[in-house]
Image (cartoon, rainbow, N blue to C red; front, side):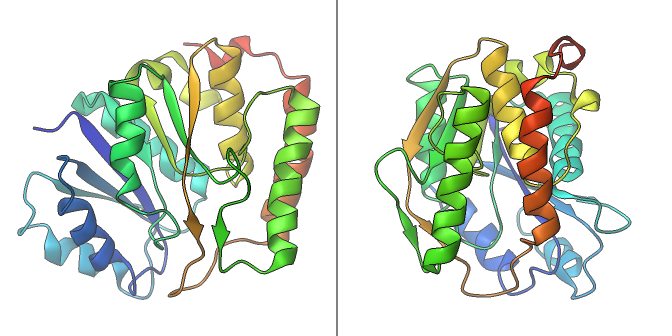
Length: 242
């Protein structure tokens, strides 16, 4: 049994999923892995299921009927993790923009140093992004500055999607009341965690843009994040507490 579960949402990730699964299970720390699969037409789900006998008791899949959004994928994964008793619960992308080896550093930040949420941060020590065009770097960095200005949240990388939670954080948050489903979900979860008084730390990482598969970023997702920050600023936090 492991005390740690990594949750990876997938949609059309056939180029990356097997390599990612094998990389996670080669780490020195024993992680379990839950893939939340949104009925990818490219056969991602079939690849995952073909590997489950090899990694029995360590690799799990939640299959959904279609592409239902990043936020709902993680919420379902969080609920599954809490019912199974995991103490440290991770968010990570499938496309290797997040280095799986950094999972151990996020784990240590919570398990050894005492953080309640550890964020794999692109911006805590300068700008550590590889293979992004300058326009996207400026958009991402500017978005984090905007979020900090509006919300007053002392987090450098407010839109980061590489995180470790202690289970008590996710048990405290009313997951059914989380509003946003796109990248604004990442902001909302950090903001709620901070407003509830949990300890957040940022661990510097190098973010490398995907080399295989297709990015899921869109103007709609960016707009939701931009407008969502304004609504969070005036949101009553009480409904988000269990």
